[in-house]
Image 1: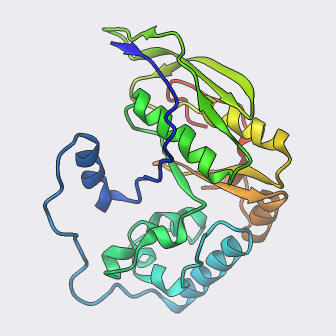
Image 2: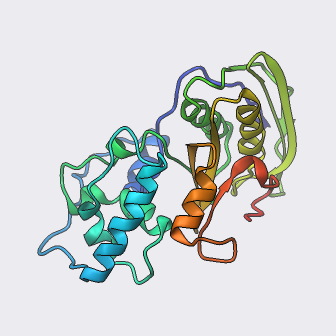
Length: 262
């Protein structure tokens, strides 16, 4: 099996919002039609203590102030049921985890209304060429025109028959300049060389926005935020690298491969 990556021209808008949608997306990737009806919560909604409601409102407000949500800012009350089911302090990772489940607790609420500036890089997902193309297209879309990416056909690389490590080569043209990435990836776990390289190109474009991410157990939430937003978010929400989650500029982080998640 050869790993041959040619950048697709179409913009990819897919993401994995949460466990309730995971089965449906896997089915779509495999070409299986989803026939079951959407699953919604039954009965009274989980109640959130007033003190935690205040925490939700504060975190949503701060995230909104720095441009995480687009094109709409969600009503903080939409998150109350999902957060009530989580036994943890309210931080951005709590809000982002609950974001994908809004339609479970509130039928008819489309999370995409708030997610034009968010994508998820799954840490545990098959790294087929199609998914690498999707990652590139996601970042090009988030850049809002500051990154113009076109594809060239790279050399094919052998996919080892009995090893997990995958020598990966990704070639593209970014804002008119050729870019070739080579790294030892992993068939099952995400690498971040693509994200790091395109973050550097976005920085160089001086568009006033940079790629930022916030890592969770499922992967990295990536957003294009204004200059200074990471520092302001972390300060306002008291997030530190030693804590459960922390915003970081993607270009400031060392790229990792073969599933070595930071």
